[in-house]
Length: 348
Ligand code: Q9C
Ligand code: ZN
Image 1 (spheres, rainbow, N blue to C red):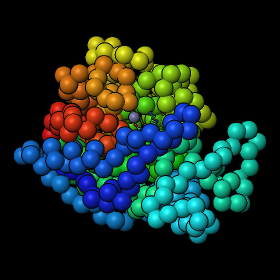
Image 2: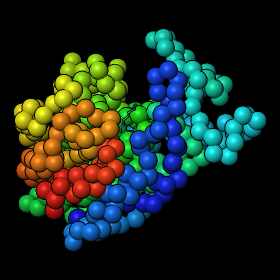
Image 3: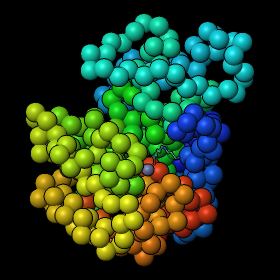
């Protein structure tokens, strides 16, 4: 299986995020996550690690707002120029104000705009964030292009985009939850030019960014299975009554699950989601995979076992659709490599 990976993710290495109470908390989304997966892959006899091409800016701009992308690109430099006294070489950028009202405006000032584009305090920005996020999305873009080149109706061809930073919380014009560019959405949008696409998001957290991007489209079916946002990040989205709107009405589905969900309960909901995908009969599948569903994840609070991860992978692979698998979350760094191998082996 072709695996797209770039060492540029090291450029994004903030050491903390801000938790409730304003306390600095160790950030779980760190370089070792990708390294552990890469390491586990290099020990298999089926993974072919490839550095992605670095063209595809137009593809990103079909999914993300142009001003948002230039914000991500320039925010760090602009901040350093504005406040040299308060920021040192590797200080981390966070906004300090967020728009609240329905009638919010986009101000011209730097600090005002920052709150406009950043959703929360788990999207720290450092000097290399943009370059890392670009290389991350190029992994997904290359994975999608490879599928377009190789898949025949009788032979589903699968690739894996080892993306870091992850993407599914990034909306059309906002970052949040460790995500800056929505890797899976950019890839799905490329695939959608030659046929309908289903995105199945099995990260522990609701794929609110992906939902935002495709909410008014019927050519990309988006489905997310996740912890009930009433009790978990991203809190404000991911509820069952969000089903798409206008043209996209009926083409988004959320499956919020209880904290503590076990393998068997998960399979039932997954079957339902897979039936939806079957009925939609897409040409391509994009799977946003987060290993934070694992029982021993430090953030996630599901109880999915290793066997469960294998079963989930097997059932998705049984759709026999050409699939791009995109890495999202998962924070148990001792187990993330092994868990991804268990999942991916169903797709080789
Ligand atoms: N104390 C992804 O899994 N807040 N993002 C966590 C932990 C943000 C998760 C707080 C979680 C974002 C891609
Ligand atoms: Zn997650």
